[in-house]
Amino acid sequence: MADVVKWWSRLTAALTGAVLALVVPAHAWAASNGVADVAIEAAKRRTRGGRGFGFLFGGALCCLFVVAAIVLVVVLISRNRKRRR
Picture 1 (cartoon, rainbow, N blue to C red):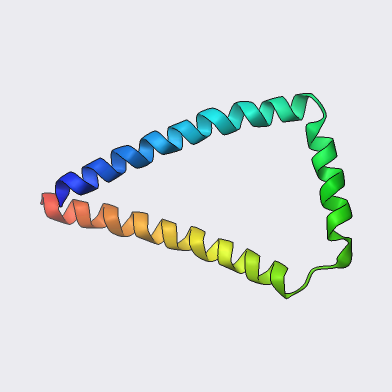
Picture 2 (cartoon, rainbow, N blue to C red):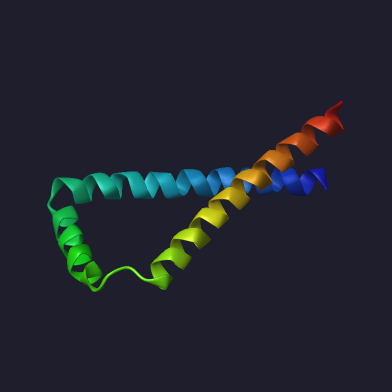
């Protein structure tokens, strides 16, 4: 089991690094050439209909996933500390 956790943590770190290596330059490029203004205008046009149940459900679901991920990380870290002692 320890090998799986070690492998999983390395894979997660590699994927996080790859995503950040792609997202940060793409965001900087979009901010420098006006693409962000087009995206903001498109978002403004799209949300004129108001915010309903779907907006609240989507936001709650996203927050739930973030909280679940944080709890999972804390549990995994605490379990690893107990095993080493």
